[in-house]
Amino acid sequence: MQIIDAQIHLWGGESAPPHHWRAPYTVDSALRDMDEAGVDRAVNCPAIWDADANDYAVEAAKQHPERFATLGWFPLDDTADGSPVDTWLDKPGMLGLRFMLAAPDSADRLASGGLDWLWAAADRRGIAMGVMVLPPYLPAVGDIAARFPGMRVMIDHLAVNPFEKLPAAAAHLDTLLALARHPNVAVKATGVPSMATDPYPFASTHGVLRQVFDAYGAERMFWGTDITRLHCSWREAVTLFAEELPWLRVRDLELVMGRAVADWIGWN
View 1: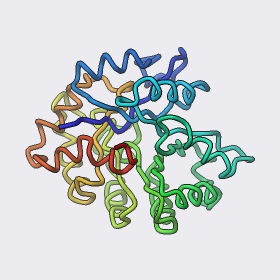
View 2: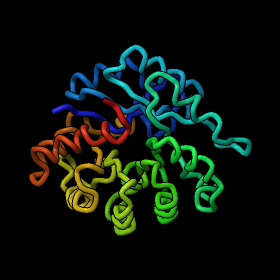
View 3: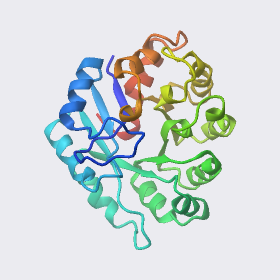
View 4: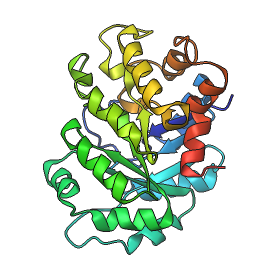
């Protein structure tokens, strides 16, 4: 079984937000940790707090194309438009885009249609688009997915606030599950241990994971870690899914642990 982490951050600078405590997180560090944990590949979402992270991602993918692919980003300022999309997608290892839309201004633009030019660009190209959104904006994601069916949406971290614990962390679960009716919406089951109220094997999260699996299926639920903010080992994050969820077995396990995200972003 090939194991592909659906979201990590690589960067070489010293700066990082406090909750990403493994900083910096370099290519060499990631390769060492992946080998120890039995992780074959990882989808790199370049750190938004490091201005050089996109260039670093390109170099990582050039040097290790069998280990890293990238969902890149560019500033969504008032002058942004769809023209950079092709330029970004021409970069080595760049298989899609990913934007953090949790800040009030960017989230409001998502809800108001102010980013429709971005979704239209992704829709025309049929590419994967990762989004980090907070629960109040999930209905807007559903509306966007319906209007731009060629874009393959990936919702970060089950839309869980990284600072919340269960049960509050999953208060939006019904809204997230309702989005499964859109065939072009998938979810990253990343950062799951951070919402747990108990130690490994994080049994408090198992019921949430089963509900998400039942709604989205193995083809649209992607295992991953966001490892730089987790306080468990990468190996424990792997075995949480691979060994501790008795309902996740054989073909479904292979899909969730990597094959499905590779198909979704076109990483052959």
